[in-house]
Image (cartoon, rainbow, N blue to C red; front, side):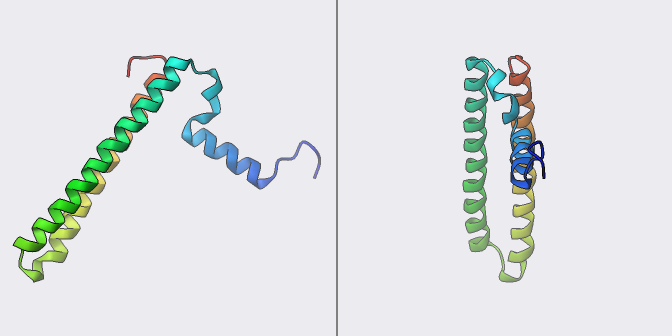
Length: 105
C-alpha cells in the first residue's frame, strides 16, 4: 500500500460525511450552518412527537381493543408511524438541501 492509498476506515468516513452532507460544511456560510442545525432540531422534535403519539395510541388501543385484534392494530399503528417518520425525514433532507443551495428552505 502506497501513501496515496486510503484505508477502509478513511473511505468509510468519507462516505459517511457525504451521506450526512458534511463534506461541504466548510463551504457553507454561518447562516446556512445555523439554518441546517435548526432544521435538524425541528425535525428531531417532530419525530419525537410522533413517537410519543404512537406510544399513547398503542396504550389506548390496548385498553379498548379485544386481545385477539391487538397485534393487527398495533402493526397498523407502527406502519403509520414509520410512514410519517419517513415523510418527515424526506422533508427535512429536502429543506437541508435547499439551505445548502442558499434557498430559503
